[in-house]
Structure formats: structure tokens, C-alpha cells
Length: 144
Image (cartoon, rainbow, N blue to C red; front, side, top):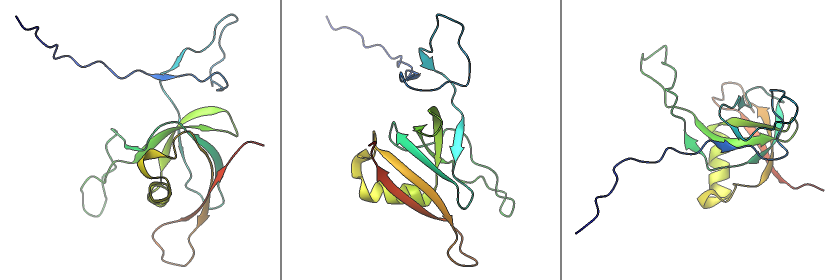
């Protein structure tokens, strides 16, 4: 007699709250965050903006639908995201990864080897007029 396999999939676990992660919510005395259910997003959009991030998981395509392109009327591709800790604030975030950052990390750290590492990422702006994308300075860093 064979056992029937369950057809229900387990729901993915919410992100665990690392011990040193700052929360935007003040917990009542005697309580600490067990799991972080919702996270703020972080995109490094402006020239000169920089953050030091610890990447916690592999990059993935967001499940949030992309914006509708005003010219074509078609939806754009959803963003590439990963979970990270902004070292400057201690806050866990959903990092919206630009195509340039994604390409460089995937090239230099194949198979998700960037997970668990710290990176200083700075938006360098556009090198020349009419350039469609921003350049980024990406530096792997370590704590002293």
C-alpha cells in the first residue's frame, strides 16, 4: 500500500530578524522582534547616493508588477530585488537592484557567491550626456 503525497506546498518562512538589526518599530519592554514580515525598499537612484549593504539572499525577480510604459502602454519588467541590511542604519531592506549592479555582481560572483558579503555601492551618475543608465562604483568591503 503506497502513501499519498500531500499536494500542498509549505509557505516560505518570513525573514528572520538578525540580532543586530534595527527595527523601525519600538518594541514594548520585554519583547524583541522574532520575524520581519514587511520590509522597506531601498533603491540607489540618485547620482552620488551610496550605501554599504550586506546581501542576505540571492537576487530574484520581484512579484510586484512593473510600471506601465507611457509610450508603449505595455508593462515593464518587474524589478530585480534581494534582501539586504543597510549597514549605515542597521535596517533590513528589500534592495531594488539596478541592471548595472546586477550584471556586475552576477559576473564577478557567480552562483550567488555575493550572498553574505558586504558591498559599498555608489551611484556615479551618467558618464556622458544621453547615456541611458547610471554607472555604479561597487566595492566588496569587510569590517575592520
